[in-house]
Length: 251
Image 1 (cartoon, helix red, strand yellow):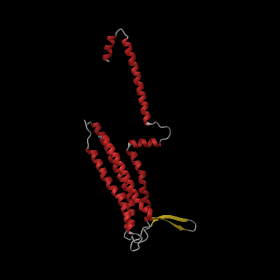
Image 2: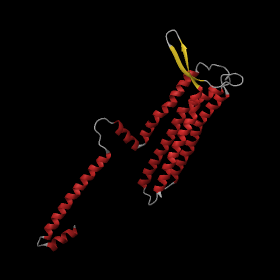
Image 3: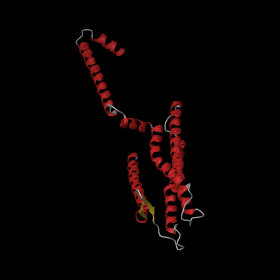
Image 4: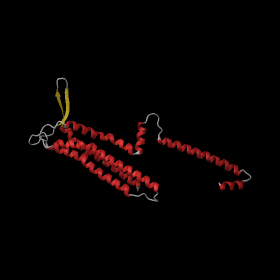
């Protein structure tokens, strides 16, 4: 049953990965058609930048309906909907973690260990969700303000907007660098793998250590078996066989 469930989960993972890639391509596709490269020639250099070139609205304003609709949908699809889905999913995970009890006899030390693990998982999930919200919220505020501000028909944004948009974009992209740090702090397996990847010098693979331990164990057992065989041979060839059998039985 567990093997079948694992195959189903793997298939669902592939489906979700494909759906995410399709949605990402669909969300980014309009930029390929409505973004242009512009040049401004100065006395000592040429300034080059990219900017949107969306169709103008009926009144001739620079902020057309198509542009406003697109960036509003981008904000919904890339931030608000993921926040809602992550919140519901993490709440369900936390509920199942704390509502299910392990089968068999309950021992106090096992319960305390499980409680520590559950608390660590809950703290990791809450940290991931909080960091995602903090990193991406300023960028959504920047986008929605630019498209829905009261003086949207004016051609220029306030002077503070460029600095704020730069900071918001930097903070949003930094979320991808913060997530591995969170996983390293809360997940021991991830931390071990991280150390193996970035450690310097010669590394001993854990599987090799396991094989070396297995070889030593086999060698020790072989030596014990040989000693047992020698003892049995001595006993069999001894004239005092019954007495030595009694001694071995007591041992």
